[in-house]
Image (cartoon, rainbow, N blue to C red; front, side, top):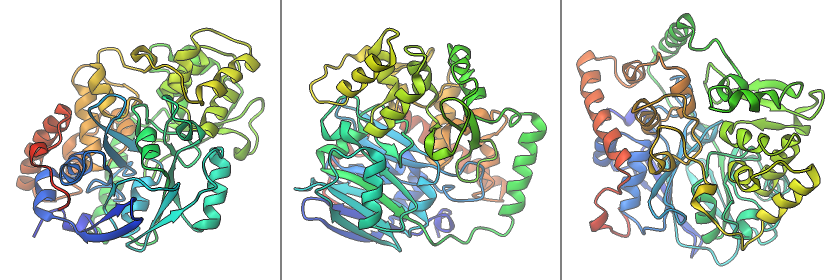
Length: 443
């Protein structure tokens, strides 16, 4: 029996958008045993299907009692950079896929008309939604709730993707994401506007997990790792973060955390005195906010418009290049959401001390809170296990063994898992698709 069976449903879905058909299949436990989960298992599944497929997947700890077990990973060959990329999606994305009865989703082909996928109760529905293109993201979500009521999490694209803008970014609901590497473009090429998740089930974890979760959180709090909550403390760790934080003075509201995360790193913000959350935006992209706030004192309305259009705020901030009056900057944002803009590599972010290809490998937006090899190692471990990669860096005191204890209570087995995890981290950082030369058309 595979060690990972209690942490998965044991099913994955395959969708062919060309025929708008879908089916589910048993999870191949041998492959899961070898690749652990998340980014590595996604890459293996991609090797079994066409190279333009998109894989959405969870890690073994996604949806568990482990801290910040929120992660869903989107894996694809980037049309922008022509290499493998893994985009992390947080909030409730991962648990909602897993609690829908599926662990992974393979999306093949391209639809003739704009479509959306609805995943729930172990089933997948493909919906044609011809009225969606061109709609701002909030309006798009309202329309989707009529076609597929009850979904609890979503990944969507906006007008920027519809217009083939090189600055398009996939969004977690209306909140944006760390997609700065072309996932929105891959979805647009498939005529896929949204993937909707309705997770109403759960998994039976070990009885000691709640106590283990409390003990892990207490260890982190006692160490001081969770002392600074909210968007700003993480923002200030960026090279120009203090100045970017100053632009938020008087605009911040309630903090928000991902699923099972004890340290919220997101904060609602609104112009002027904080008001109802629906009038503001959820700040989650630290690098994106820093890039926008360098270019305008009115960065918050610019960010809100970026999120409505499905634009990457980091790329927009870099393209603006200079401070502009709000109306002029807003016109520039609208223009960047249209097709035909030229793309220069310098318009896309990197991070000091991190090789640009490695930074892009994980979506191009994971805040670098660690230096040297610590950043890629910790982010890769998070993307394998199903943990938020931002939290994995915030909680620097958190050792891999602390997380692996959620998988096994046996000391020797934890040692074996550590060796396996190290090997998978190395493989993921190489950015290769396993068995690429032997690509098939299905498991």
